[in-house]
Length: 223
Image 1 (tube, rainbow, N blue to C red):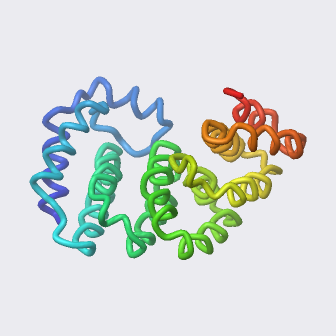
Image 2 (tube, rainbow, N blue to C red; image 1 turned 30 degrees about the horizontal axis):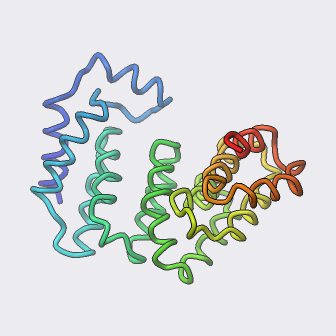
């Protein structure tokens, strides 16, 4: 695993722009330092890494993701999320503990939203029965980023969205003052409105007064 992590660090350092590192950290309000590698550069590095270091099996996949995630720079953690997404066949229940760790340790929208929509979200689609009690636990968790994940994990589900669960989770968090929860409620409803605008309209008509102005505004943005 150290070989993968060392190669990731070497490739990032080779394309780093130190002049961009400070502004990138400031934008993200990040205490984790940046190399100064923007998305296009990270994409090229990731493309090379997935070819050179494919996982042998699920256990190896989790070890490799964890090795990248343990890097000292934010771009290394971005690579961990990208590597995890790339090998979709390993986005399975044994990886859940690792994804949870990344959500809690990452604790910011740039990590959490990708993990919620593309990693946890795929598991929800593929393993609804097993994932439902997990999401029920997370939506009531004192850890805000787990609650946000529960709200956002169906962003890409379209017609396969569990509508009842989505509406229930939105109402269970509707009382919160936290910006990232209010935004997530609105975002989740807005995305589902692309699939079933009438149901979202009906939900807002009945429950809109329970939601924050931010949540209502986001939910109705394209209605």
